[in-house]
Length: 380
Ligand SMILES: Cc1ncc(COP(=O)(O)O)c(C=O)c1O
Image (cartoon, rainbow, N blue to C red; front, side, top):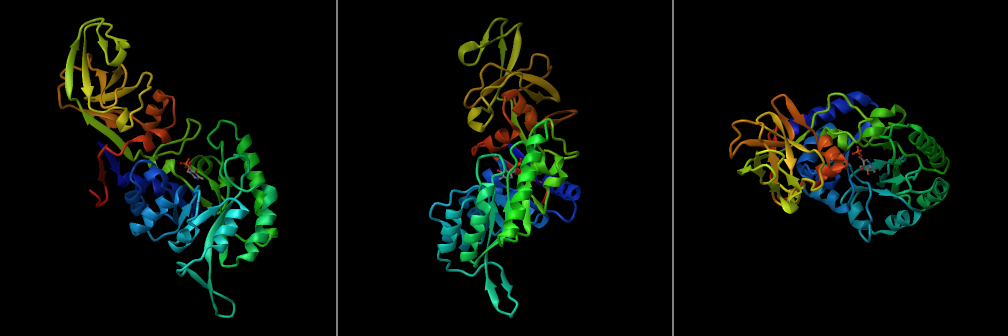
């Protein structure tokens, strides 16, 4: 069972806001089903606390609109295929990353009024659909080259119903020990801002920072930030610390069986773990089909407030832990895989370390068959 603490989510959002100050807008990133927490509920809780939300796919944005989310929704990384009209009609804000894509948005018939219209200088109603333009400043993943910004300005002038409200980039290394790559990206982004303004684009929402960028580089905050992981109380690497963020998700189960394993007996597929002494091994009904990583090294769970090591291969639906040193352990006991129990706690970051991955993958990987229980905010 995954327990999602919505009160912790609210506190995290408030702490992030307080840290960056009132002049910086916050776009809460809820892609990948809200990093595995459930996008619709997470978005509905965040909506009053943020300036906008951000997703990766058009479908993710539509899911939020269908659920009644009214705030701006940025579509960060979409391949728009032939859905340009729908994106604009549903009031999603596309991030556009090349001139051809801008042109396709410009030519797309739009059969609905924009969500917000402006009144022009002569009192006329200006119908304008917001777009953000993405510049690649060094990640080499998505975005215009610096040299293509002027050309995009020319294309944008041909489609005055599209308003370039935002200019953005993405930081590749804000969580790395050395700040050098990030500072170089920020310098290139500053040049892009100058070039955009010089070529007729006047974006008011300028954004570059993910969680690590927002916490470590105040100069990366510009007029908006796009935190994801920090909202969920995890951090991308040990280099990054944002004091007081609380994990939002915990993962719990119960012991389903106990076995006495004689010294030398093998546990799980391939018998790769052999009991070094007579042992008591507990079986848990959680496996890699639930999103628990199969390859973990030295991983632990919490049983009766104590740490117990995972032994043998993690199976699809089950895994085993050595509870020899936890007296009184019984079938039905609660087990914490991520979360707190007594004085001990295991964070998604710990599990990521044991699995040789990052906490993003752990959180997004909690699978559909794991029931989500929401607490802390009228969403029981
Ligand atoms: C373009 C973009 N912006 C912001 C984020 C949020 O990043 P983080 O979860 O590190 O805060 C992501 C996530 O990968 C992203 O791809």
